[in-house]
Length: 298
Image (tube, rainbow, N blue to C red; front, top):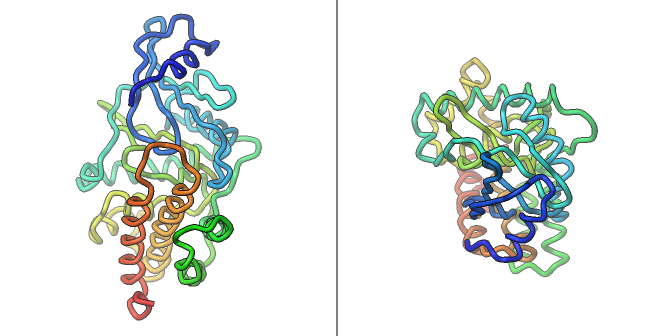
């Protein structure tokens, strides 16, 4: 992405910078514009993005949790914020790939970081914070898609019937402060530590959502999923946990699918949401058929 004159002017006008230099686009992210900036011998990441109401993204919530995550030592410090802008310290670390998480030792390290994050960030956050109840989100997405004449409208009745089934299978949940968008690229690996970034979907949720999301985004095999669950819960997962986890993993995939379907209608970013919807729908159907083999073709 080329940094436009408009973006350069916007960065130059931020009061936190004295002489911003070497402004460059930063890859990753399909709901924000991200750039790196150098100023007076320091390097920063600038995230540009407004509220996204159809996705429940509220920047005040992201900012609150990002600050708590920095206090907990999980995320880079927030240097400056204003409407539509968040400036963070740049950390010398590389985003992970799905293949990285196929290394058992690294998967265990990441899982333990997630467990610590669930406890430590919640201990730091104060004031209003959103929840991230995936089944409410799915119902909201379905209503939005129906009201806006989505090309996927014929699928909604089937998908929402399956969502109800998944919610019953998950059952009662424990609440933690979750990240809720555990793409491998949101986990940064430095020389001697891990970082977690991008809290726009952060909020109270079950830990099973983060674990299921990590597994699907990294394409983990069943043996690796068992290792992840064992590392998180300090015990071998029993049949009940595996059933609830499997249902939440399906819900995570369905949420990503419907998120993309909505984004096909609303997003102005240069990204092929239609292909992303198709890919995620295929992954969801495969996971659902595995979870409920007698109904997977319904």
